[in-house]
Image (cartoon, rainbow over all chains, first blue to last red; front, side):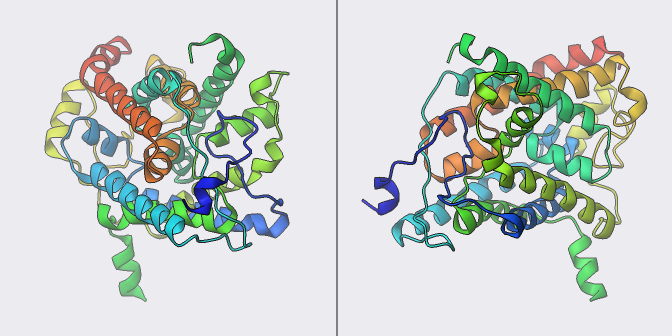
Amino acid sequence: MSKVLEKKPQVADPHCVAPNLREDHDRGLELLKYLIIGVVFGIVFVKAEIISWFRIQEMFRLQSFHMYGVIGSAVVTGIISVQLIKRLNVKTIHGEDIVIPDKVFRKGQVIGGFIFGLGWAITGACPGPLFAQIGSGYTVVLVTLISALAGTWVYGKFASKLPN
Amino acid sequence: MDQFIEWISQPWPWYVAGPMIGLTVPALLIVGNKTFGISSSLRHICAACVPAGIPFFTYNWKKEVWNLLFVLGVAIGGFLATNFLANPNTIVISEATQADLAALGITNFSDLMPSDLYTWESVFTAKGLLFFVFGGFLVGFGTRYAGGCTSGHAIMGISSLQWPSVVATIFFMLGGFLMTHVLMGPLMKLVGF
């Protein structure tokens, strides 16, 4: 067992899928590295036309391989990277052990996942491309973003009453 | 240099874009033990702006500011790519898709988005209500209910071999197929296409 697996992360809230597991806080300019990674990511989104409403339609209509190729090769790259990190016991640049929290199965992944899928086909965007579309000048997508925030808020408000 | 700009301005193929997106996973882990996930940013914005005493939004969102900077970066990246590296040619969309969409009433295929629809004028119409307000709501509600979106589940979750993320991804796709093949036609008719 590698160190990565032994260490149980302290996650205050298991619903948060992207928790910050760094032990000391990032301060000031240190946070810029996330902005820079985001910029590269946003450029890829636009240049590979992943933000295009039409590309998502092609994907769901099984009329183009493009999006399957993008997501598939991203996953393969991710799997190889995570395996290398675990097997070589790679640390962060701050010398911490890398921690990947386990995702716990809930009914939400089925029901919520399905609801998101319905919305994904209408808007032609998952949350990442929404931000890239706005940056690309489709400012009307701000309305979609605000609606997505409203959806998130309504989920939060009724989270304890929904099957999960 | 000019040649480089010309080359980089072409649409990038999947085998370039996919691995670059996949590399975001180790990049975030290595620079600061961060787990890749974009829809969480929506929750942090709710927690920062309208927590309203709801337990789901009562947590230290400031610790997750990195995620907000990441999505700000995505928007800036979108701006840079569109304004400085834009593809000079129109987007090439599969002919089968063009035919299917034309049957639904979408006929302008010259841009990344259906440009007749993606205007501020359509926001307060039934079309805008469907595509922006209703669609956006489903994205926000569904991703949070599922505990993640394409990035958190399909890419980060499957990369770390977590079966709940595989389940979530299957249901993302099922929802998308149902909407595209069954519901979208009647809904578009309803809003006046």
